[in-house]
Image (cartoon, rainbow, N blue to C red):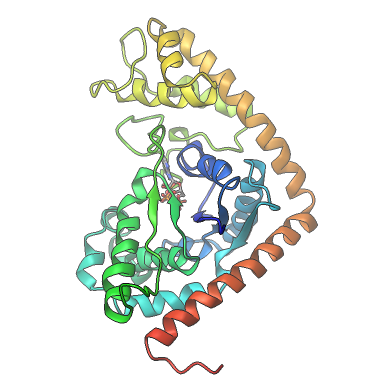
Length: 337
Ligand code: AQP
């Protein structure tokens, strides 16, 4: 029996934070046991906003090392750097020519990021979701584990595959592209900022205190949690819209403490913030310490990391080549045998 495929990735645009981890990477670790899993460092996406070449290089390796440190096993999955596989940009161009412009102008993330960039907004930023569609469709992914913020982009990838490629160039019994499904966790699908519980935790937030990065030193973690926004009520609870910080911190705590949703709620029902915050800090440091240890080992042995990325690249190349050729043949491109 062939295993179902999974594809996902994170942009090397800064330090990976607990939102990226709880909303996406945590999911991959489970899925690699039962699925053929491809995880990439989406560096081509990282240049859709202004970037520094030195940081991109460092962050690409560091992101791959963090995947492994978070539990991705190179013997069970393929880990690779997106820009090493030219098929991503080639399929992106083909899909660009099939995707209506007004589909792209509706994308919420584009609108939000474009406002921040003003006059300098690039075509690449508008095109980001088509490149993301190419990333996914190249690997015939059945499932794409992402955070809530990427749901709209996933829907776009599904529409491009079904309405713009399969229905125009394929047949019902012989579709050209597999139509992927999003996999969004119920818990922590959208981790919110520590300084504003109504805003998504994000790498690009200029306020460092808004996020906990996976590589933050314990002292920094402790300081950020001390400064995290709270309210004047006693006891933490889920789902009270007037208390977004309580919902956010309790949701994170339920996972990092290992207690689960109900037990965490029961334990913290009557807890004041002064008792909760030190417990939250301990749980966070406990869960991040082994990740940081393995990350440091990998970064001190780049040979091993390079071997993993080379192996991932080879597998990704083989798989993506097959899909790209299938698309090109269906669209009438000359392909030598
Ligand atoms: N706050 C979040 N909660 C849950 N999941 C999240 N993800 C991102 N932020 C949260 C998920 O992490 C994966 C990788 O995201 P990305 O790096 O490709 O881009 P992003 O969604 O734009 O993440 P950031 O941190 O907000 O980066 P910047 O600030 O650079 O844009 C995705 O699966 C995403 O859903």
